[in-house]
Length: 336
Image (tube, rainbow, N blue to C red; front, side, top):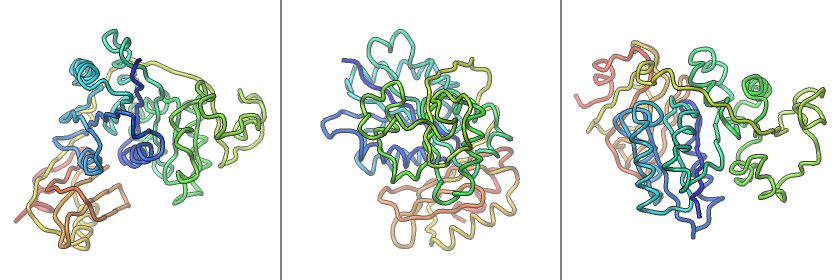
């Protein structure tokens, strides 16, 4: 019996780790042997630490993008994982600046095909930032959208006014994939894992006879009315693109290990100071550091800082962007 592979893609900070936690909780049986291949762009993996704290078996590949510089090593590592653990299901979470097409190509390697099959390629898209990412990082963002079977919109509850435009933008890039735009607590995990070609596996969860409000009553999109933000539209498509750009050439990463103890207020203030005055463009920051009342988890996107209590321990902060100044960031966050 071949293992099932689910690829969870999405640009920086879209919500991939949150989605994985949802799928692990709702979709997979306790009898399933599930392995997560986790890749962060940088020397450390904050997401892997968070998932491990929940008891997930994680195989980490760091210091680069598995679908770029480590392409050959990734196929070898995947083959070894299949031979050693014989998992029922594999979740692959590429870096936020990884290319979904390259992951798909690697999973189609002749060494992998007899042992595992890609069941779904899922991309998470942030409704607030997808237009900005397309304008500024089109090659990476487009690849993740165009090669997905299922596109799951995130932060739709926080920014309901952005949902319609985000759907239209995504349909302009990929008019054939399933687009799920409802808040995540209203979406059954089976809808996410099984795209249209496997709809029989979850037909009881949806009424496919109702037509598609995005493209009209014709399920193939001919004619139709205006987009309904609660509609999920789908057709089958896979587009393959050759690899022609490395993430390492386009993005900088700065990893800081610090023994400093932060209060949530202090850490948030430092982040806002960084956003206002730091050189370069900081697209993403995340980390686990010591807090005054236990460890805390930092998640930063431009204009958005989230600091929460964390069960995992750590002393690390990771910054991703362009033209970053390591010395400046170290001065802001490392121990004095």
